[in-house]
Image 1 (cartoon, one colour):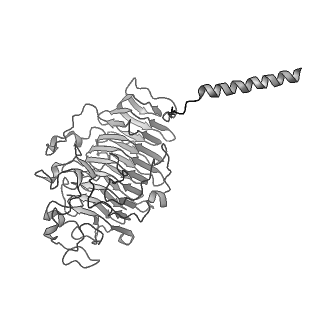
Image 2 (image 1 turned 180 degrees about the horizontal axis):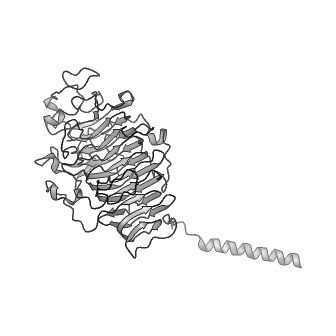
Image 3 (image 1 turned 180 degrees about the vertical axis):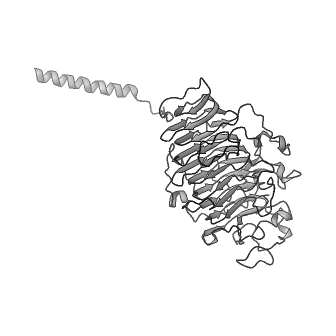
Length: 469
């Protein structure tokens, strides 16, 4: 009798399981979407009072946080910012990161780290001396030598470069203007993807560690008369900057220099970036580049760059001299509205060698292979002759001065079908992030995607990959 009872109990359990499965099953015409909640680390950060001092834990989706003093992420701590958060930085405040900072926005819910109640002046030709983009409302994100990981995804970062009132981080100096984003651990990892930086007093960033900077948009970097590069890599920096749109930088869009004394040589792959109207705000342009640049012992690869109305083309510097034996470049596209712009596709007195893969391909008269570039006159028939065919950007530029366009605004820098830049890129090399630095592919703690070199020149690919803005 006892055996029969056990069998009966087992049958009931089996039937219950079957009924539960049936009741939870969907018909073949229904679909189920499983929503993964955003990552949370530690305790929630309260938004009830202005923030200042040591902070760790998670800033929660949908909340707005006000910062009244320097934010410090201590060594060993992590501060996570979830999608959709707004962080309003007070005047002169700073993110001082000794531990880990993760700003993990998404395409549908980007993060904003900005100064509140600022009206932008992006109309072409607006008075730059009154433009709040160059006024340095708050300092920036400054990571110390102890910071091992800084990840920024789908995040708007604006109005950078205020002067330090406290020197919390190594290398910061009271009274000096902040770099927008500063990373200085050669053994650490800095990842910045699919984000936007708008407005800085000086350099936008110095990623002096392992870095992956992909698919971002940079506008109004470097105040008039002050100079400023967008991605300025010094000694200890090694990585890839690719598929970035750079509009209106004061000096270089991307720059590599081995200056700084680290035992890790600067090694930068700059590929598939689009540079527009760069190099016109610096106070002393002589010997300074206006799009991209290698100098002072730096090495790397420079391919598939689209350079439009910039003050110079790719500069391989002779003084201080770059590591010319370990720099490879080509497949770069240069457009100029004027003869004077085309005369600086290969900067005079430097070591950039004309490449047969460049567009347009020409060798300046009087050039002797391997010698410094002479002052030359480019063929007049090349002026305005190779428009890249952007979806929406007037060429020749419909403005009085090239410096008057410093922001994306309503322009669209995707390539139209039939663009001469399509299919002309070099895809026969690997990103350093894969080949050397072994950057993890991880939605929270690494790269969402390491985008390989594209067959179309510039930041936007006709197959939909590349820059997503």
